[in-house]
Amino acid sequence: MCRSRSVCVALAIALLLLLPIPGARADFRVYEENAPGSTPPVVASEPAPAETPSEPAAPRTELRCTVCDGATCEAAAPTCAEGEQASVVDGCWSACVPVAQCGRCEIYLVETPPEPIDQPVMPEPAPAAPVAAAPQGDHRWLDLTGFVQPGFIYREDGGEEVSRPPQDDAFYLQRARFGLRTQLAWWLRARLEVELVPSPNLQDGFVDLALHPAFNVRGGQFIVPFLRAFSFNEVNLAFLDRPLYTPLGQDRTVVRYLAPRDIGAMVFGMVGDPSPGSHDPVFEYALGAFVGRGPNVAVNSDGVLLWALRLQLHVLGVPEGASAESDLARNETPRVSVATAAYSNCDDRGNWNRGFTVDTEFRFIGLYASAGFVWFRNGRADSDGLGFLAGGGDNAQCQGAVRIPDPSNPSEQLPLDFVSRGAHLQIHYTIPEIDVDILRDMDLELLARVDWVDPFAIYSDSDPLFGTGPEAATFQPSDYVDSDNGYDRWRLTFGLNYFPTGHQTLRIGLNYFLQYELERVVASTGTYRGIKNDVLWLQLTAAL
Image (cartoon, rainbow, N blue to C red; front, side, top):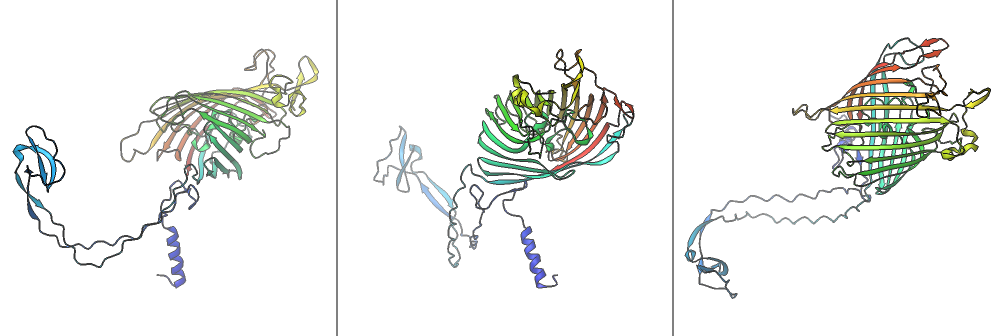
């Protein structure tokens, strides 16, 4: 019981606000009421008064006869075939019937409508005012998004210990994000996503001009169109991290100049029919120009833009569920894509980074596989060739800040010229659905991946791809976390994903990483081979 009238009124208002809103969606899509393109509110009219039941009347019988040769209508009789005559029913010409049926009578039982009991006459409700239809193609909407990825990491002892890398077993919050997607007009969309771990920072913040499926324009901060691994949002990744040659915070030596996001502009689109029902080839492209200093840095100190071009061919059409790094959609026909991409930028070490990648993907009835190779050369900008992308030989900001002695003349210093490479091969399988009520909506996915990275090898003219020719000098890593001179590593990963609802938005992932360092680290405190880097990682992903 309420102790006062004001408390009762407040509770009543709160209950009214908590009542479900007609038409509200579970995916948090909020429509602007009566805005152009929005769904107009539905107003229920007053229900018509229920009719008062009356006493049923007793049925009666009726004698019906088929009369022939007794025309009573002014119209002409129909022409009948031999052995038939035109019949008359209720005084008018009817169908032709066999002569044998003329004059035949039958008794029918007829239900008599009940006579209503005298009731006051209720006026019919006035028709609702017509509502103008929402204009096609001008639908405004807003999606709220967000996800968290808490977990626990157990690190095994892989050999001699060093103090720099993380070694403890600990609870780990990899990501916690929230954001929104919105469409302001059929041709204008926007995306915003903020990361809260370890401190708030912007991940995505861009606007799309959706002019045509084959030509769209994007501006703001977003993923650089280069690596396949970057094409999946973090909530849609199959493994708990990306391949070794991509960044993963403080836990990994990275190819430091290869940031997943940057500030810039891009044109992109698809040529062909991208609907899942089509199996014709679809060509996809993206060309972007960026500041080149990574996310949330808007100052271009060297005056050189980061350029990225990605070309992808969906050989058998765009698969269903293409935004996820899995085949939970269980595409019923094989889907294959091949891609290549190019990259150019002058990084914060004064090195001109130019590189390429090739990759492929396959999906079919729960099976997903992908492979990729990436290569970079880092040094001073050339005066010819593609050097103009980095300002050419006249750009003092892109001549290499790190220098080494010239082997032919030790008194001279040469800019460092080195190559970085990496590769991965992964395969997953979503097991068939189990036809049991409690299991039918769940999915289990088995994962396996092998990946490799060599972030530093002196460039050699005799072996430009791998830098292992006679001209190449041997550099020994001095630190496991030195991103300017990292060490070679192989890694083998096994995993299991459990989807309680059969969707990417709720997933429990378990990954086991077996890692092997190909080089010893020679530090001032000694020589080390292994660190605590064999990892068992359990993580929950929960997303809107």
